[in-house]
Image (cartoon, rainbow, N blue to C red; front, side, top):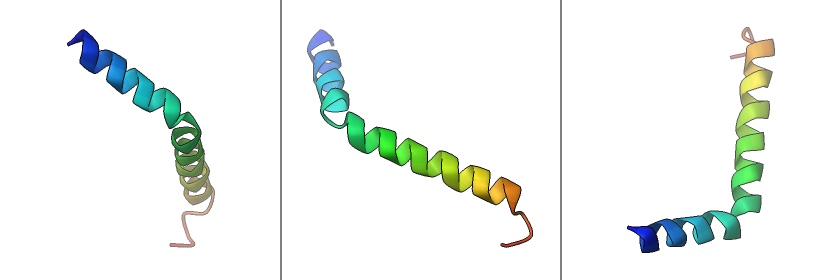
Amino acid sequence: MFRFYRGSLHFFSSHHLIWSNLFRFIIIFGSYHCKNPSSR
């Protein structure tokens, strides 16, 4: 179990930039739709 945790932690740290960009895109996309609900 500890080995799996280290592996997942290494995977997350190596893909930190991709995850941060993905979360930022989701947050911007969500806020944009919340501001413009009539432009569906």
